[in-house]
Length: 308
Image (cartoon, rainbow, N blue to C red; front, side, top):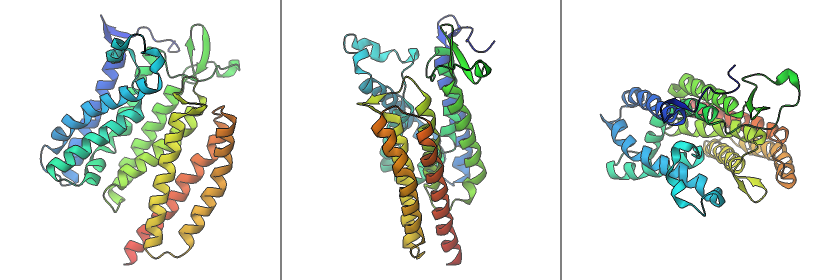
């Protein structure tokens, strides 16, 4: 029954895509108001920050999509402004939002890391809600499902009479999982900015795998842009935590973790890039190893801080 959306519109010409994107933003804002008090930030920081982050985020999300799909807009640039039809890339939105947060941070002299922690729990919640806009637009789906045993919703969706992997649903559930994990652990994070770093690591790990199932990925040559960014985020966060552990006097142990992570991830990543197929199977090992190694080095740093 749910394999095909009943309509793209809530009523009239109001699209579900727009309603769900706005609903996700509102949910993130409500959560940010609570986080503002917990983090001891000045009153109305959330409202003022939103006035910068939301416009920058929407512009970034659209520009990111347009840049990598320029052939769709080359002959009719006015289509760029029709964002209600879809075509908002989350990584572009995060990059744009971070730029807006950096501008606000500089203007109000509030540490940038504290602003990212303010937004971190709400980001995956907003993404979990917003992904359902892809369902109503019948987009962001994956490869065809051949096995009849898996031809049901939410494992798959019906597009023009054929079953395809419901990758929008997979990512929505992963984002919801990331949201729950951040809500359960954010109070135990010792440094400003750590909540956002863990969001980047966890979201990147999940997206790296899920992107391999998709058939509509934004491409850079033979490579999937979102997989490159996801891998880059995971590696960057892991190295940040590892360097912290080294500087905290943990000896050669974090270096060993770096070596292990490199050995277990470089092979699959190299095969993924050389094949150009985006195979999801090749993404599983890096997506498991990097977060686990990051958790290991992060706990080492936390233990060192406790001992001091």
